[in-house]
Image (cartoon, rainbow, N blue to C red):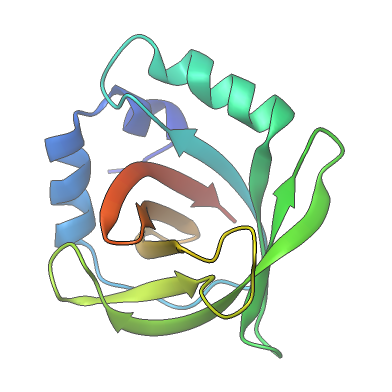
Length: 143
C-alpha cells in the first residue's frame, strides 16, 4: 500500500503504532526529507495542526551520512538548525531496530528529545517523538 502524510493523519494512534511496529528500520536516509507532524492522530484537527507547524515551526530534516547527523529545517524561513546524531538502535516502543535521532549530546534546545523512525515504504518514514521517556507525537518524512 502506498502511504502519504494525509493518510497517516487519518489513522488512529493504535494504527500508527501498529504500522511502525510492523515496519523494518530500513536504510538511514540521505538528504532532505519533507516533514509532517502528526498530532491528534485520527482526528479532524490533525491536518490543521500539521499545516500550522509546517508554516511556523518545522518543515523537515536534512540527513548527512558523512557526519552521521541531521539538521532540522525550522522557523518560517526553513533555517537549518537543531542537530541530532543518527544511528540504528532499539526502539523504545517495541525493542526492535529503528533509526534513532538522538539530540541528547548535540542540542541544548532539544537535549531531552529522541526521535525514532522506520521506513514504511521506499523513501517514506514514520517517526515517533519522545521527551525523556514520554511519547509526544508522531511525524513522517518523505524523501
